[in-house]
Length: 93
Image (cartoon, rainbow, N blue to C red; front, side, top):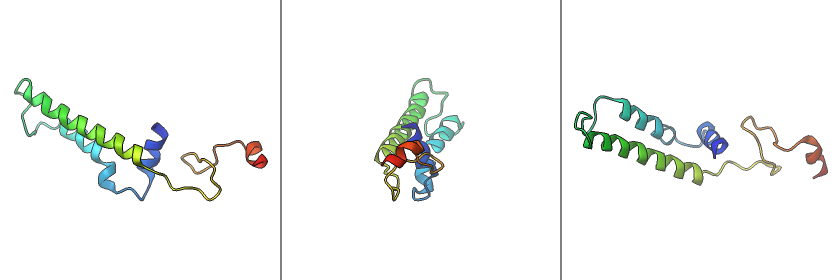
């Protein structure tokens, strides 16, 4: 899932707002301005936890649904686009 996540972030076909959902949730968590202020003991923390949880679930679902572009030769690729199989295995195919 980790390499798929980084491919998701690097893919130009994915809209920027979808990539920034997690970052915006963390910024909301760190921001002193909330929908429910953090000085209210439980409710303020639950508000932040809800936003972070929703963003995490959203990002996991988006990455699971992400289908990277298929390569013409059908070989798996690393993040730089190089085949992940050794050259000896590629020659035997």
